[in-house]
Length: 236
Image 1 (cartoon, rainbow, N blue to C red):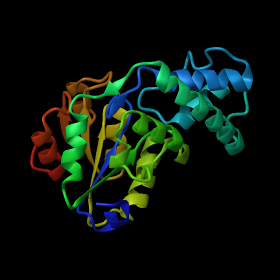
Image 2: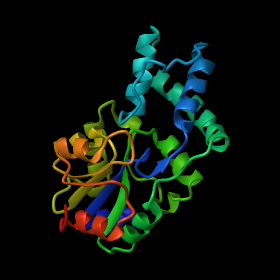
Image 3: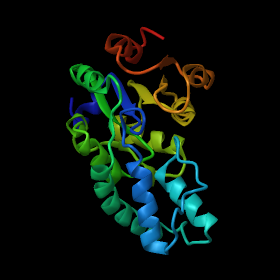
Image 4: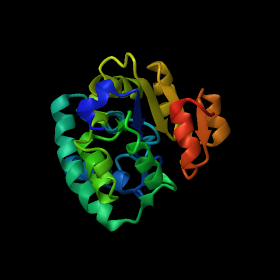
């Protein structure tokens, strides 16, 4: 189903990207570090900044504040994004990453469901997300790169709110499912009344994700049948 048909879909699935759909081998952090150095002459500018589960806007602004730089202005954020995207494209070709286990099959299985639409609920900047999906060959599952992105807001729950509004209107009548690997994904889903599916493919284990309120948790996504059941609400 196309995004234009999402408002009639019974289920909207919002995917996180890093360590849920794919692993870039650190290309994102490398691209950000190089862009920061280009703009401000500071090497390893993100050394003290936490990346996992956070939006790219929050990551950039934390680094800017740490170094006394003007990172809060939208114009400065846009300037950083332009530099970052340029570096990210090169970094993706330099390092080795992969799709996470079972992702290709999971995306194909969900795409085959007539009443399901897939989109993104990610902390990545939109252009960075598009580059990553294209590099790993899964951009065809997200035509037009729909959803919510890192430049929409610093807060993850607001990114998910924006994604729901863009893809499913106010979400009324649709089952919205968020799939991600960090507690931020789980809490952002619950804050928006969405179903939270955790995947322990990043730094956080099954028990930890369950403890944050995930409705279902997977070690990885190789059990396609169980994932489809969880998306439908038939399994935990």
